Image 1 (cartoon, rainbow, N blue to C red):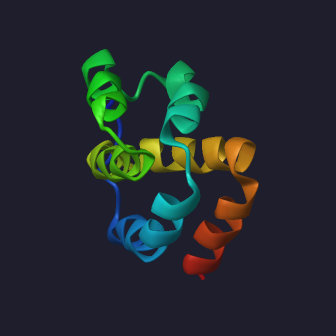
Image 2: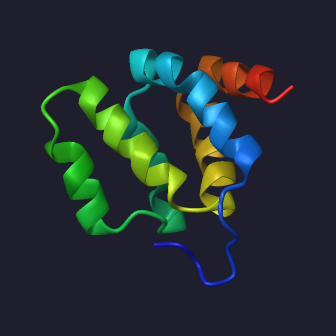
Length: 99
């Protein structure tokens, strides 16, 4: 659910996610990240169910990242804060890709 005042994710944010995708899929636990992001109400319960329904962690990561990219700039920033809490080593990859 994109907030009405939220702007779309910009090209730089999308590129960073693309650059980091392999690393994120390899190491991220999307259910933990979703839990950390739950207060932001960015993902609907249908989104969460769809992500959790995937058989492997890697598939859950792929679906999570696909949905995240459609959520907007606020979602990207919320994702970065969640990653910092749940998988701090991945935040450094994201920050490095942004330079």
